[in-house]
Image (cartoon, rainbow, N blue to C red):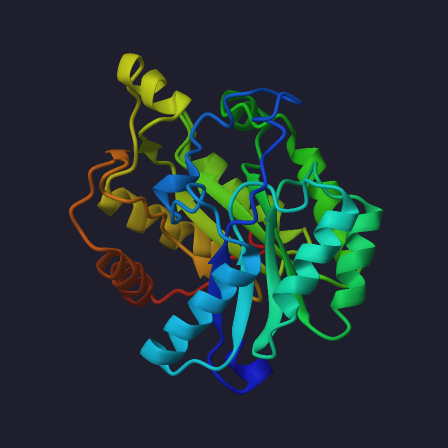
Length: 294
């Protein structure tokens, strides 16, 4: 982003009041097994402000605190293409009406896009940076079924490939640490992602957070979650196999302390990221060094 726009670009998260097909009765009513948006985002549902108000307030704060002057609006909460196209078009236009906003990042599900939506985004992409972030979550259908996602990996593949045909930036969100998921399966995930036209990736360790179906499942059926040391090693292994041109947006998930049930990690996010770097340096390896090596 700094290279593209000549300065640091700050991301502004907004809640546009969307829901998901696993919550509104289309595919279910409880949401995905692990999902509680309040565990990682601000609770704006109480007295939800308009998208314009949220953006205006965030820009003012970031300009004051960070001296920021370029922004991406991140439609983050729930499924941000899950609405009539007229509503989507209006919301995206509102976000881009601020002169210092240079683009949009749109978090969504792979089963909630179509040609009409992608055409709108493609048209916006002529003048702005537009990125579609897909909750792929796993390349294994058994994990997606367990998490009650309501779609399979093939749906993610089709959505990613179609989105790239429209010339849009594509990000993928992946979770590791599903019950019974093996190291070899995690490393094979890199190979499955490598063949897709993905520009960037977010990797998240599985969390158990409060007020989710997973909280109750975990309470009666506890399963092993990654320790900090295990996570550092497996992510270093994963990066070695990941295509070298894929931009890393995230390598660790975070949840607010007042919502987190497990894992109870003691180290900070920055410490873990530094240890991942140190592990690669000690090995003399780097992202993609084992790409395409059987």
